Length: 170
Image (cartoon, rainbow, N blue to C red; front, side, top):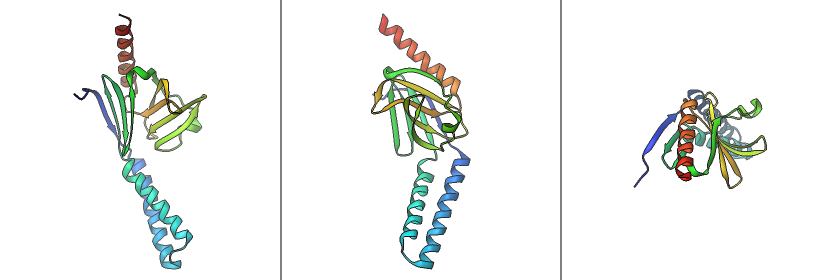
């Protein structure tokens, strides 16, 4: 039986879509131009590579889906999926990442913040929540993600963690 979804949010970013679309079209135009001018050479291959990367970004990073069930937190960005069991969540707080790391772009990023390795699922214009893990998943110690309702997410997850701790004590 599938867990009942308690919270479901799907967000997108018009700015991110526009940026990736512009870059996709730019490298498509450069690739076609280079193929017409010089034929298939190393630069046309580079332009083709960038075109394919930004085409993938345009398709894959259109939507970030966030779900919370009674058992876990689920994040999905296109083909990429991350599941965090509630019993592995230490706490959930508003993300106050340093400014230089905040503007690393949209999509999925991996970085170290205050000595902890983090996976970040984000769009730039939304606030972020960070979940600190009790046990690492690979090298990852924290997961951060964008949301339109950070206070609601924090209250929900922290409430579920408090309920879980109370039931495990009894």
